[in-house]
Amino acid sequence: MPIPQRQLGASIRTALHIADRDAIAAFVLDEGTVFAPNNPFARTSVGAQRQVWAGYQREFYFSNIASLGLACLMNALCARPDDETIVQEILQADGCRAYVYHPGDGCQIVGAVLHAKGTGALPVIKPLPRGGRRGRGQRSALQLDLFAVG
Image 1 (tube, rainbow, N blue to C red):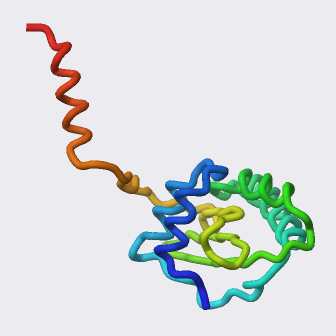
Image 2: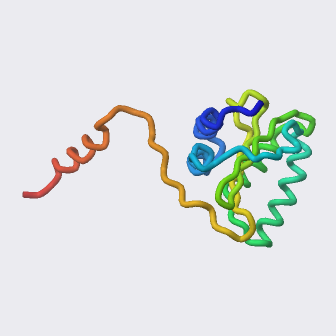
Image 3: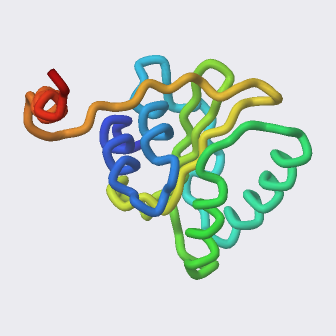
């Protein structure tokens, strides 16, 4: 049974080792994004995925395929033992696909990649709202007014 999209998105947002985590999380959380109907390697190994993504890395570069998170995923996979079991989640929408890897709980994200299919573009991703207290932005604006001349 796949991890709920909401949990995956929240977990990706907290994965500080993924540089593009906010954009990937926004894609995962988007209403139009769904789990892929076919995920042949849901349970896989770090070594297998390192081989797969090393090939994709070259393919994406030479075919000019847009992607986010690939370098971070490769770094994460290289830092783990080859025989470690991980779970692969595949989500897709509008000509793009996201692969998310975790140890099975959906909470600790190993890595995530978002890529366009073919030479299409990545979706325009709206920033996700950050947690925090209300009115915070208003206080910042008021502080700037203190320095206004006149």
